[in-house]
Length: 456
Image (tube, rainbow, N blue to C red; front, side):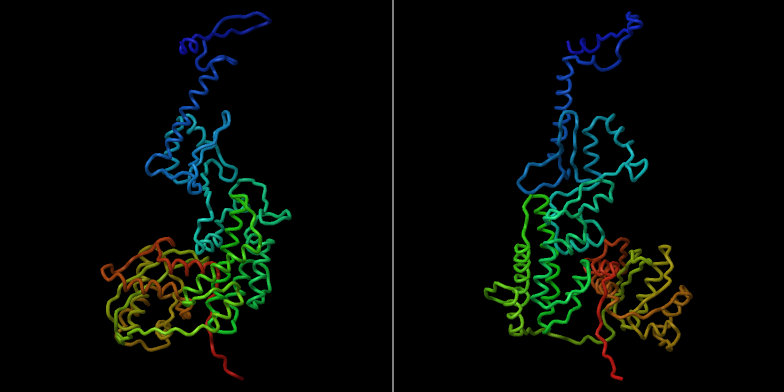
């Protein structure tokens, strides 16, 4: 009966007040037909059940919600449907299988304002508070924190409002972590207690003021290193509570949460037992805590010994192009360094890169490669091969503090004797410590080396 009502539809054209001719409708029903509501409900019910079944499929990762909440796959009002997914290619393909083919073809052809002719799928995350604090700095340095200014950069226009401040202010990275009301009070509270002198504006200046300061005692060095990290972490948690849960956190609560985190780490690190309820008392406990000693068997293995090599190739902006770790076997440190440079140069040329500047923290080897120091016979073959491959390259000496990534990769090379050379093409492939040091180098965070100054 329904099909007869839909197929038996005829139209005529009115010309000068009179109807002429008839033609049959090819699809759809007449405007205002009472059958349209029933057909709409049937179509929406099929779409609703298909989208809800996605959360039950194995391997589908949907929109992240807090633990215990009902999974959200879509929101619908009348004929407007908003579908939620995590942005991965597999999840989007599962969603496209549920949608009618005509709708998928129409959506893919819609251009975005900042990307002509292509469609962009933006990743969203509901529970941003679950980020570990050590990844917070990595994401902030790359501009990947879901702040209003970052969202606007993706072409999504939103009304920017900092939920942590009473006055109207836009939500930017520097406002959240440096110039906001709660942020300013939290930094000032801990800086006044620890005597940190801060001159400048910006999150980076706050961090450097802590990390480059000279505490009254060496025992407080560890405390000064971890306090700014926990300040930023608790500021971020306060921001997420205000944005996602509607709970405004006061500056005193941020300071208290930061103190609890610092206290827990200090008690574990220094094995302190006792109830301390303020940061000044904690600093006093750290200063007067008894020194701990442990005994470790140390054995001199001599030179030569088990050796490994490692290196990293970066462009002028600090972006990783290539990295490697190699197991070199038993040899002297000088020959291991020369063989590591030769391995890195050969690997770069094989991948299509030509190293313009080669840095090493072994001053003797740099002098040999610069032809200022006579080359020993046992590394003559490796050095001549390096000269033959990169004769125009510039050999530069760098301090060990600036060569931490290569040192970490060298230690990694010793750990895989069954794999002579292991290559890393992206930053995510690097070991955790090497990846962190490489990111700090790209952000321009300096290392500090203490040098004795001669009196004049």
